[in-house]
Length: 308
Length: 114
Image (cartoon, rainbow over all chains, first blue to last red; front, top):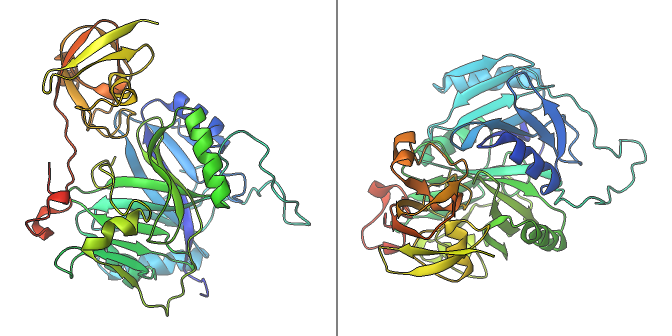
């Protein structure tokens, strides 16, 4: 796919109950690199392999969940063009000034029909991955934390799935890759949507409340690293949801777990490549368990119930 | 290692909660049931209980699920409290598998709201 519009997930701002406890956990257990704090007290992180300045932003609050999820677009002309398209589609947009997030340019912010705040931006300072762009060495994991490759995608829960799906597909150029149908065989319970050739960059599940976060996901290189992540989680008494196991949907191997404020995160590996000419994959209601957790072939209690 | 007995009034289940474990994780660690288990980190609210009797220490929990007034009346998330005496509790929280109800045909108990 020739990528000229929305490139990839770029940042997620997550609310936490105790910032200092969380900063320590995201640094030591997740193995993310602290990238400083801003005047509002928000704490910034990136993975070791990410080149842009930040991808995870923590904000202390009295309730948890996700403030917003941002996608990087190709350049400023693309940002202007996508903002016009959103407005023409009837979506109200606002501009958040450059520098509001550290080392990040102007952002176009809008609400999607599920109530979530999504952002687009073109500029974030490229600070490099640590191995550089000239004759780079392998980035051998030599620290105790999980050390994922990148912020990869998120799964959100909200009421107007159809409206949000159509906005991503019709306005922002995302592709529908997989879907789960409810028992009526028509209504989407869930959809998986990449803006790239990945299996997903965002996924949406139908839910009775607006603006809920199911998980933010980080990519690992191999199944072996998924097992290593599980060992690190147990050693650090991390609250496990399910895994290690495999998703039927996307084919990824996975662990779901909860960070210190109860927001669900995922570390995963694998997943197929998707191109826009491919027919979407459909999961029927009676096999949704295998779609979500391929080995158990059933949903765990928390999957449809526990969100932040 | 001091252990305090937690009694879940709804079911009559009781267990010895090991020192350093929250009421919720203490229950899970012994294979006991009665309180719904969610994030175990004070964020999701499904493990909410009312403490009827006993002393405990607490850690910060989400205000979206426990208001200051509720907290004063002994309503807490069981994943964020640590017994400092024997406790009697009543379960308030529930797993709400709330896939949008209007779109959900009847007769699908696996996602009916609890």
